[in-house]
Image (tube, rainbow, N blue to C red; front, side):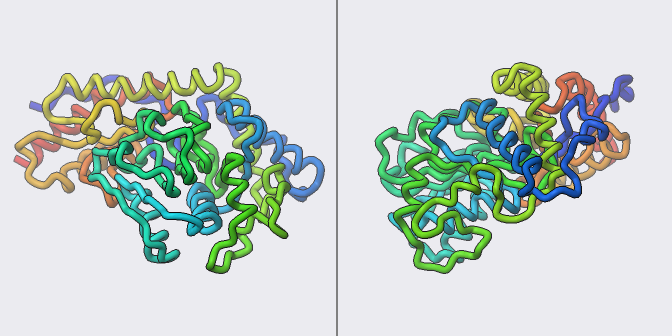
Length: 381
């Protein structure tokens, strides 16, 4: 029997995993101070770009000797810059347990044509980091945005490694406590946990990564947009706000507003707590029901941002069609937008739980999820 239509609706039905919900206090008039119509190389533009870099450092606790750059093409651009500029100096291990990690594997093996060791795990699981050779360069995602699985900690990464760790942390930064001493290259994009606008990536380099850039020249040509050195030295301007190409000063302003909001609520601990509370509400909901479950097999590796769910009811004849129908029904009611599983992932739902989402909205969504499930079960006869 279908439950009654829930009485409460989420105030904000935006649960997309990217671009993600804006900060709760967002309004367009907050962008009035954007340096529009001004050169990004003018003093005002440089100051805003520098502020974005240094406030990121402050909130995330990034060491003072790490370089932070704003680069083109979102997180993808940042990861590609790192791989094309640094890989090939030593052996490579590629780790993948979801679609974006698989994409990095493809680029390294098929485009750079490196003889890499590839370690893969199915959706819902993670590779065994104990088996990884960190004397090689290792490329991995911290949080599998499309699988809902994350690295629980950096304990398995040795401090005395010879290789570089290159970490795609785009749905982890600002929601998880990243161990900077274990990460040599870290990337993320503004449109994830901070709900910023897309197209800009962040590239964070440890001193070891800088040393690699200054002492290694890849065998392949590098497009201008990937070049971070000149005459064997790091182009420091890239990491002080002199971007490689023209950034959107409107997007920069939006990111600054999100960073200010993060500071106002208590910084990284508060951001993590908000994401944890959002994810816990869904975990508890699933634990009390036998028709839905977390895609992540091990609770220790469950993501607190991109929570991926699967339907487990034996009455479901076509899992993919059923999940799409549930997502469509919820969108039609205006209570949940863009929560279908990623196109390459197993059939199910994906609910973004990052810090810009209010737990009250998650709580309001969950009865609607049960209502939609029962409605679809009834509809399929």
